[in-house]
Length: 175
Image (cartoon, rainbow, N blue to C red; front, side, top):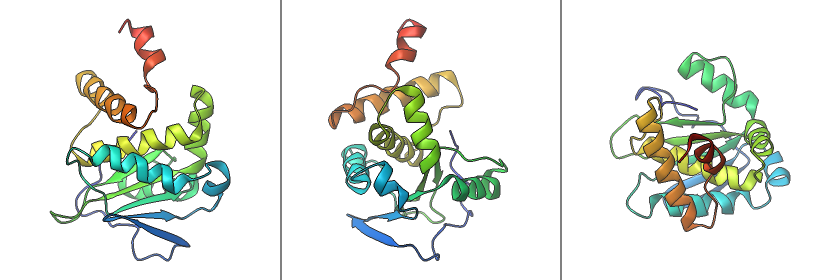
């Protein structure tokens, strides 16, 4: 997935986007309108996932942007040196007190959901929670970190009725 970007990483802010809706302090930006056709109620799903992920005082992102593989690939190259799209990018805030930014790639989210036998809506909710946990300092580069992050994702997703996204892998690992 992705590590948070460096504090001096430029936000995607300043660009003009077609649809913005506030969620508390968070703006949900639909940069690619195909989200609405592929994931009905995408903005409501993002709001539910944010509410669950921040219920215990988790980081509240400034922005969640629903974008495309093309945009995420460009951001991934610019900020991480990786010339490929990824499912979610999380950007730490440039200044303390700001919430950071989460950007999701439509095609990758839908492809991964299909591959895992999940709905795009459930995978979107999972990745929003994943992004919030990155903003809270969680990571998954080491096995122990990954396991802790997966357990926290599962706990948060259960609040909104979404099954453990790791269940088949945990069964395979003997958990």
